[in-house]
Image (cartoon, rainbow, N blue to C red; front, top):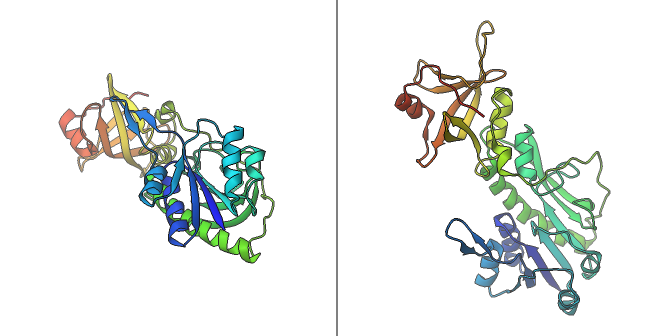
Length: 311
């Protein structure tokens, strides 16, 4: 029996590769249209399309998935499954009803937590210690379908969105193959999502703006969650500074008055910033138009004497 795969970004690539490696007959790959990106407006090809073409799989990139022509093309294939991984659009009922065994989605959270487009980033921003991957039988809602399988993944101390993304994408590939096999055997029974849903909306560039009035712990989580995109940022005078890596520092002894955003050069030469609660050690940053550097190198080069970072 054949499979139709819907997916677009890097996160979906391990799932498609796992299906191909397991011998599934992936008859068609549906992905978003190529887009112009960057200052040079170069045409960007979705990673899923690149993999599909490299394996000789037919690719379509419809501007709309709600046309009679598109639905007819899928119906002619008569797939056993439609697999959806980070495609980018909600499928209408007429498509959900096409496959024999249903449309199955791979989502990078333990649903019903973090429904939406950016579950990995928001799990980090909110300071979660555990996340995971869910496969679900799709309905017309936003990640609201019945759960098929779930696997947990520990969030490690120094994870950012890129490192967690990589592990969860690979876990998603393993889980979709297991889900398909278990559905055929009748051992993956859909169950209602249990608990109060939370949501993970798409990130905007402004979500990376650092408010130094927040706690050092909260800012560490923010920086991890928005790295590599949209990046955490603040200003040194009028110069935009990206904060790429930072960690909360324990404050020993009596509580001292804090000026949020004020810079400190530690006895070791490292750069720390006072926050609304605690100190944030800046391990790596990137001044506008320059290469990334250590906080220590920045402090030495700017001769820090109590200047401030501004939001």
